[in-house]
Length: 453
Image (cartoon, rainbow, N blue to C red; front, side):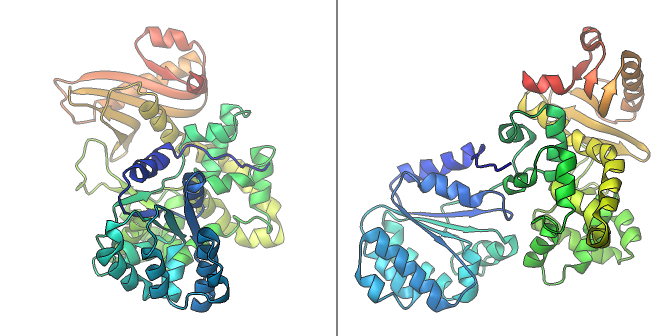
């Protein structure tokens, strides 16, 4: 199944179009993880406008300049550049600065260009400050390596620090967006796809026929995703070994610093340092109980991308089986898949509450204390609090009532405006028996059918 759709990204295109309408010089930075859809955003934006798209490569400076000369020659119908290419980035920006027309100059994989030609940063600074910032030029600099984009664009010491007029961080797609990729699938199948492949558009290319056939593909030596997380990590850090150990620990449910330390055998200080790097690289997020401040010591760590989480939990520790007998890996995944999806289902339910706006709660997240935990708790300034449990299963009426009663009991441990708050209770599941009967009793009840409305 080949997917060619351009899904969502309405906000990103709108931001770019708003800047385009101003007729002022623009210095726009687009960044985000590899395969997240940055290039397609640029191409969609540029397709009905005058613009040059240049893809950076790990190649010699001479090859870079010859390619950019060819692009400029074609765009400006300048045959001289074909026989006499520009021989420096100084010459490239001098050439651009002499053009008075409004046009887009987009450089994709910008860190690759800088790696070969580090002087380009100072050249851009000089021409932007002294000539181009008063022109109609529309620069776009785009990159996948977050560590390199930080170094070359966002770090205070870089020559072009502070020049950008807009930066766009491209996020993963949501579960709702996934429906546009697979509109003919039932929602249960799409939950499985999202749990395993996450919200990275390019990863959806691996889906074919059904989720079990896709797992078979993922655990074959031919899959381009077989070592994808490892390759991305190697792009970002010089020594990935310890990062891999930490990510593997998190994927198996070791989410506190203490648990990660015990699992990996690393020093607690090292774990804390490496977790900070992983957060900066947008691979890990830190959560605290929804009723706590961000400074809480109860912080837990989760892998942000579902495919990375899946890979570190199931594929990485079983790579030796992939080489010899991948069926073993398939069977391990099938055996544990419902439990794994159940954890992702909590996030999907949270997305439902936010996107469907079924609760007017400004703060939504997990709550836990010692051995007690609640999947979703929502709070607002009116002292209203809502409690949800999320169950990746079909529930009969009595099962639902039992879970709701247990939820009420656990809610008493949540210390938040206890004497004055207004409480509501809810439940998510695949499917409910007597859903309307539960709703008549005042419970917030949602299953997969409610995503369609």
